[in-house]
Image 1: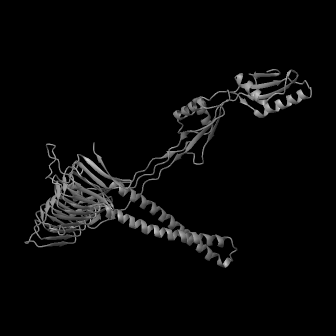
Image 2 (image 1 turned 90 degrees about the vertical axis):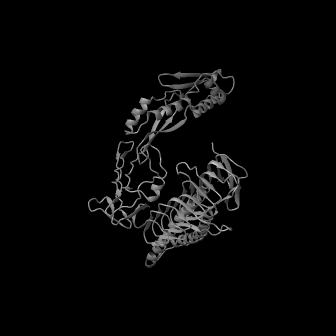
Image 3 (image 1 turned 30 degrees about the horizontal axis):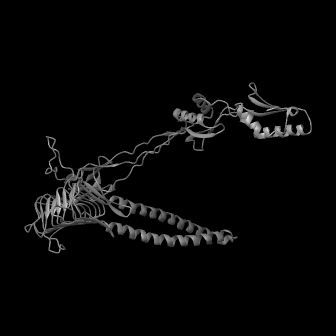
Length: 551
């Protein structure tokens, strides 16, 4: 291009543009100059568009006015990468802001490390993070801005509070964990010694809280951790703090231990070798331990756990805790399957070895070691037939209302006897609570919105000094109402999550076979097995029941 010269000055790291109007054949265009810059390989430099444009306009003016003066302008330069460190107020991270070079050099890892030290970054610098930053910068266009966290502090971890460790197991835990003999085999009949402690027995230990872990920020400051809190014993009935060790809880009476919700209770225990016409009915304020059978038409009512090391036949047993039957339970059912002669009712869980013709009602889980048939179950938890870690028992010809998964080895029977499972009650209870909460939330939102408008009107006015206390009181009430609204909003979200979690938890699992005649229901959505399946599960998703084989 006549009249246009480009020269790079290595000493000044600058690109000079020389325009000679005397050699021009026509007026210059800025785009032509940029094309020339690219052709000569100077496009990797930093080019000032305004300088190019100013030089071009000046030279064109000289060309038109026949002025032969040369125009020399510095239009570009070689720039190395720019590195800047950004550290927030808490100094828990350090971010490098790197502007890629214009024909210049990228910094090395060592260079960035030295710059970090100059910026008072003393700890948490990651070499791999710096290498990743430089690798990204190599392929980025010139002048690109890349941000990367290269140093991280370690937040302190507060110590955990003291823990409570039960020194004796609950009766239900003992039953669900059969003993292992000397030959290494598990004996399903050997459930260990009956848990019944004497007075002054150590039953609960309190461990010391941990100190936690100190942290640091990127400037090297040590961040101290808070030591965990000492938690007080939640004193249950029949217990007291040991006079020898303040971290040990002992039993003040002889009885059956029950540890639940961090509270250890020692239930005063009634012990009998059997319940029959000779002993009469049992109605006890504590726990009941029967080392024998419970015969037909007998009644046991207890505030605590009921443990029966024997067989139950057509009896009524009611417990304020758990019911544990180490052998079987059996009863008679009328033709309409409406009345059961054997009934077990517990506020907690129910465990039986095997059962037939029994009516089970409990607030928590039902566990059956071997088989359950021709029975009715209403429980607030799950139903497991077989060993808890690998259920392989049989469940058939039952009506079940449950709020959690049903797991067994076989569900249903070859004969096609019906097994009905309904999960609707727990789900509907959640819906009722959600609807009630929605109504309350709508009312509170409306009230809060109206009160906010009135508060804003009051704040915009000049309030006499004598009324100021009353206004402050109204504002405090409004803040309390807003806090309550936020709390209920949170509860509403938790209720939605609980509804989703309920749908995800319910279903059937057959670890061996699923026979025909098994139905599962959630309100108006139901599923029925029409044939025999191998290992399978039935679960609820997207408002439908789904079958899936277990591989």
